Image 1 (cartoon, rainbow, N blue to C red):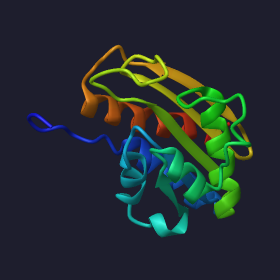
Image 2: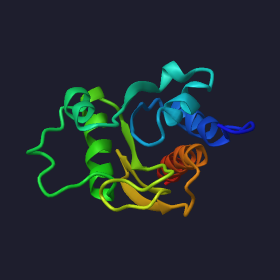
Image 3: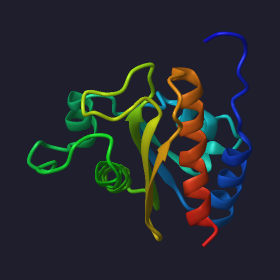
Image 4: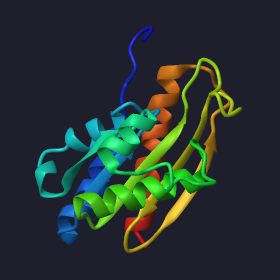
Length: 164
C-alpha cells in the first residue's frame, strides 16, 4: 500500500448500532475485500453483540471447506456474479444461524479475474429479512483502493436493507 489510506468506519458504526438496537446478528462471506468488511465491523466496540463470524472465501477450497458450498450447488453459477454473492450471503447466514448474511466477491486488480471481469468489478449481496444484490464497477486497477471501496459498498448495501 503506497502512502497512508484511511479505512472508513462510519458505515460500520451505523450498521453496528442498528444490529445492536434490534438484537440481530450478522455473518460475513468476503473474497476480494480480504477481510476488511469483518475488520471494519469488528473495529466497533460491542461487536460481539451482533458479529457471529465470517470468512475470507477466496478460493473454491475455502468455499467448500468453510461454507459447504459444493460444485453441485454451484451448477451454472460462476464467481464474481450477483448470483454467487446471493448464494454466499444465504449460505453464511444459514451456516452461522445469523439474522443477516453479507457477501462480497469480485476482482480487486491490478488485472481482471480469470472469468473476464475487469479490475474493480465487485458483486455484493445481503440475505435476511430483506434481500438485495448489486454489482459495482470502480474502473480502477488500484488493488487496495478497490478493497476499501468494496468493503464500504458491502456495508452500505447492508445498511440500506437494515433501514427498510
